[in-house]
Amino acid sequence: MAYASIAGMPPVTGLYAASLPLIMFALTSSSRRMTHGPTAATAALSAATVAPLVGRNPNHFVIISSALAIGVGVILLLAGIAKLGVIAEFLSGPVLTGFVVGVALTIVLGQLNKILAVEVEAEGFVREVIDLTRGLHETNDASLVMGVAAFVLLIVLHRVLPRLPAALVVVVGAVLVVRVFELQDVMNVIGDIPRGLPGFAIPAISLTELGGIMTGAVGVAIVVCGESMAMAKSFAKPHREKVDANRELIATGAANVTGGLFGAWPTSGSHSRTAAAAAAGQETQVANLIVGALVLLAAALVAPALRNLPEAVLGAIVIHAVLRLIRIKPMRRLWERNRADFAAALATFVGVLSLGVLAGLLVGIFVSIGALMAKAARPRIVRLALDPATDRYREVDDLDREVETAIVDGIAILRFDSELFFANVTALTDAVDAIIEEESPRAFVLDSGALNRIDTTAAEALDGLLGALDEQGIELLFARLKRKPASDLARCGVDVSGRVHVRVSDAVNALRT
Image 1 (cartoon, helix red, strand yellow):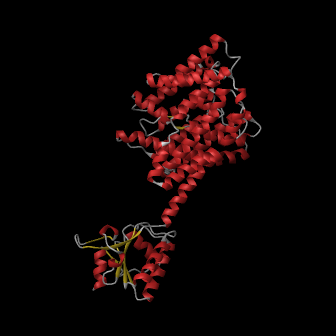
Image 2 (image 1 turned 45 degrees about the horizontal axis):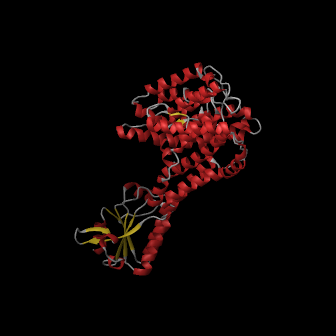
Image 3 (image 1 turned 45 degrees about the vertical axis):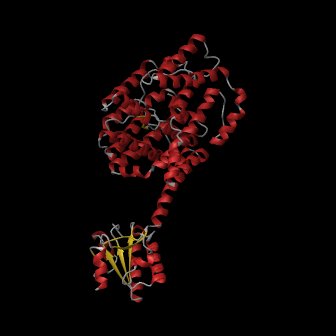
């Protein structure tokens, strides 16, 4: 119900999102331990995606959110059927790190106005901070006291009695306090909650709305896919269990379609729920079937009893849940280990705060792809020389020798430590030209063991390099060239017959003789 407030949905839809999607996921997932349901990230993403589409009709929010869940589910189902589970690997860990921290701060800020009972109409993190600061004089003292008390109680219960369902205890206690002291008139409460099971309905949307929904659904599906896959693997690994990525896409897609047809917003694999279930001893999806059924029972029987639940308490529950996501240590670790990964995480974090949740995610993805392309365009090309101690060819740097002493009998030996394609073939030709200009070798040996395929652009560049070297009387031989890249060259009309040798030493001996 607290996550429903993040998604901009009625509180009861939180029960729908935590039940029927979970039951469908339990019936179709390959993971034994994964738990599915509402998460802070997907709730925030859903709200950010739906808000611009609703416009001046807030009553349309539930319909658009449900349609978004169906759209996300359809995309994931199609991806699973097409066996595109590998796409989950493209949402890198650093991007997820920056994204989660940014979303957590955004959510905390959004819940502070519930605890303070201050209206915030601005959009964007910085503007919301300014708006909230200006409205502090309007703070509702009763709401503030209730929210702070609930937050402190949550912290104490989690530390002293970790197995106790702290949020449930706080909710029941807050409802009793409001009812006994008749505080519903001095603070905001969630109000009437309809009793009963969710009803089946196909969201009635226009073709214009469908285009915007499916555009946003792509971004939400990427996040859901990345979160769910990473989580399923992390919880399966300690038990040496295998997770079928394509089946997980189908299960997650089916869960979202089910949720959307029964009035829920997009849902995903939940780290906090999965961790809690694992700590309680869950080992199969039967536990999730039971949980889903119990939540439906709660929606049917006890939901109306929560009408006096203060919104400040819901805000405190959300803040307590997402504060654990604001971790500085992973960001600091990225800075120490890989500056490019840190840049991707930081770009995502700043993007989420300045541009919004979905736009920030896209910024992080583009930065990651850009860094990957930049790395691919600057391949590692190393010089090799003979190690007298082992009679093997090793990197010159490892042998503690100067590059100038690496040429023996006028032969320069290079190893290309990357795939060879259109973006990096120029680096190879430039390296060869530089060696010719500085050292004037009579021949080259190219250790091609890292090549698995060669595209047409790279093949044409290699053909031009061979022709240019032949004109200068310089020979080029290939060592350890695999069958696939050799056939790629042949298909492009590049003749390397007589130039290919099994080992580097074979190519060097051929040149010497």
